[in-house]
Image 1 (cartoon, helix red, strand yellow):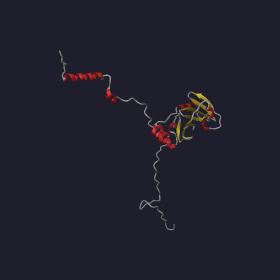
Image 2 (cartoon, helix red, strand yellow):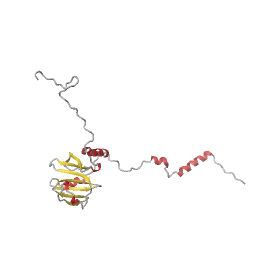
Image 3 (cartoon, helix red, strand yellow):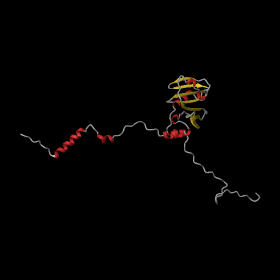
Image 4 (cartoon, one colour):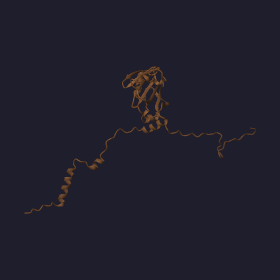
Length: 223
């Protein structure tokens, strides 16, 4: 005998199909859910002063990656000292307001090792004997009445130097270790703006307040 298949009504079948689909997707958020999920951070936010730093440094002829800033108690930046070192390096000087001692920061391309350290003069004083002492991750160098801390970075060297009898070694070391890339506020204080200063109109005292403004060349009687 042939048995006929029993067909369920559509109203009963629809809820069953929806339940089955939901159970199959329980562990899958689906395209819409994944699209709305927050993306993971790709890395730290860019330094807000990077663009300004690059434009100001390049206007001076300095490579932006060679611009550093430091700090030391009692020392303030001498803005007129900020400038280019060598081809595209950077240098700046800080002054102690009480003693007038100078603290010089210099950053230039190159490297410094145990073999090359004695060959590199302290404070650009060529022809002088240089002694080198390893101090943590830096080199402490003396010569020509000056001392210096030099730190090797990727492709360049950061140096902080001063006269030996003017700035104590611990102050020099702290200033060297404090050297860092400037943020937006430090960039503004360190590097001159690339925008030209507004022109100040020149006032001439011989221009009359009436007429076409031509100079008053009137000569008195007998003049």
